Length: 559
Ligand code: SF4
Ligand code: SF4
Image (cartoon, rainbow, N blue to C red; front, side):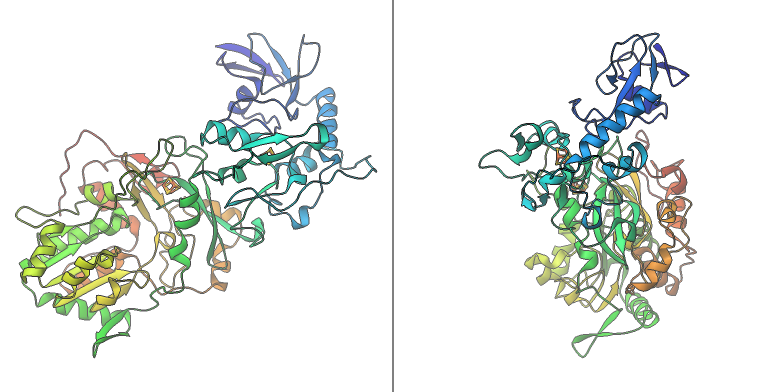
């Protein structure tokens, strides 16, 4: 280890570290634009200039390696002067259009202008004008005038996305970011350039001008787009998700997420064809009914079937809590051995960066909490065959549109009784005798287990009428920073949906079970007590970074 001194603090640091890394690890901020912990060092913004004793000139902290005995000053008058000069230089040709810039409120240039610049400009010449509103690719818009030429976006495309699509042309103040001839900024990770652009030069074509950042809440949750389970923020205004951005987790997704997950994995939350009320088949059509009536009808109808005539289909889109209670209900209350769920693997649609072929967030979790046939029971294919043969007459399907496959739809249409839990209308809900509206991943608490066994928390960013408000300490930590989230929720339209575990608990209670779960956390605590691999976990311990399943235990579900 090397002993260095930064601003009078003596630190022991890894000799391979640069000054900026050593400072950051020890809670000392050195302002920077072009440096990023996961990209190569380019050293072009000059914002991280520091004074190193015995060096003739100021040094850039991002490219200067620490040395034993080094004494660094990050805020003495010489450094402050240099920083002010850099800021003045960067702002000379900047359009200063914060009032109409999407980045305002989360812009490094804006923040540093307040913190590290003089707050006045001596420049009274005409600014250099460059192209504005340049469509760099399908998802990213460039305002060339706002670019400070940090090259982060160029390095990201080359080094992380492995798609060198961006470059600079021209020289001096006329430098412009552009794509290579014949290229677009079009790769599966292109929108990460928006996150790392320190100014409002790169903006999201999807999100542009939808909201100011301070109008939204940001909830720490997980992308449900594939089994990677990228950590992300869900940004909401008036009960509507407006964007999703990656949240740093070095064990899962670093600072990144894919464009598809970012743009598509929340679309089903906002769709117009959400199921708004419980529904029941009457006179051949589905009609709206109350929760009590639908739950009572489901319980009374299910009681009329023999154990062997019922099958239950869980969901890899649902949480561990939903799946755990479903399989427990199936075994303990319905008494069936026919329990299964469907995997949604798109062979070949995977890469070495983040994207996984399994397009569900929780197939490992569904399996580990016990959604599988009991001894002598049927698997998914067996259940479909038995439906066609008439030996299975009643099915309970949760949160998976299995009837999108016409052969499955044909089988389900032969049933005497079909209960479906789902959040929006689709091929499966149309066949239901009883239909319960369920909360999406964005409207409930719970956990997903990603492909490598990391159990991670999802948290509600959008409100339903039946919100599980008993949030653990972490759930609202981020929201609290943005003030009264619940007040904002009150303004948006709330949907009448419940999480699957709660619907199941209601039906089970009417069928004689004594289920006493008030929150998803209650269900999770039971998983911890009964399912191998989860021992020692709690919502609090899982926190914002997740916890790995214990590996060595055998899978043994007590249900
Ligand atoms: S567009 Fe943004 S990230 Fe790219 S070089 Fe310009 S300022 Fe840097
Ligand atoms: S890689 Fe998977 S989990 Fe990550 S953002 Fe993309 S779809 Fe979502």
